[in-house]
Image (cartoon, rainbow, N blue to C red; front, top):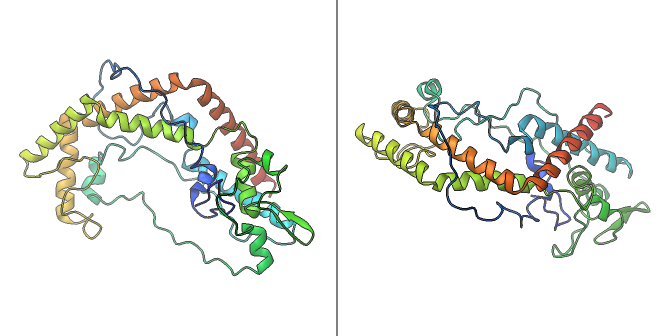
Length: 316
């Protein structure tokens, strides 16, 4: 995976976004808060698919991520053209893709449980297209030099344009650190030094979820769910994972379907989803209040990034 501390890019996964990303994570969830947040009334909820979370506007959904991936590949191709090459691995965004919160709190859709058991129909397994062999210069232009990963390579396109660290030349033209793959990522994800690291909102969201999982109200709800399952003959304590004995080989088998149906019924009986969702919303809202300035910048930069992506795709 591409890291901004390494001149080598990740050019395949949807998080080529994570492109910049795994460094600069010194900002996680902000300062520890005072106790558990108030939550008010808890609605009765079961299916989590369409539940909205406060942190969502700061993070690209799967459809937007597809557009950003395609746009990043356009930028890589533009860079490759400067040296007389083309980038052949360009991805195409799927306009039908939609991220939702299905299974955020474990299996919770009765119809899905009855049909698929613990199999997740949303997980589509696709094979990567074979990569065409690259000539030495083409490889160098795409990926840059093999260099010491501890070198302080530029962390933004603004810095990269002023730096000669880990650069080389092909045909008399300077190849930037990390080659065109890294340049494409930086131009989209870190154009300037003040860009908010993509992982910052992600980290806040993950922190809110982790805090909610340990919250006493959620812990109590999970215990109630587990006791409900126990009354029906199933010894389970984690609503996020299939129970013991259910694995890749039998996720959709008769036994899995029977347990899955009871799993969802116990979530309904204990209102696990309603409680957990309400608690997580409270933690996310608090994190947003504590980090409003950073998140406002992140949201503005995401909007600008999406506009740039749209223009790049339209002009390609």
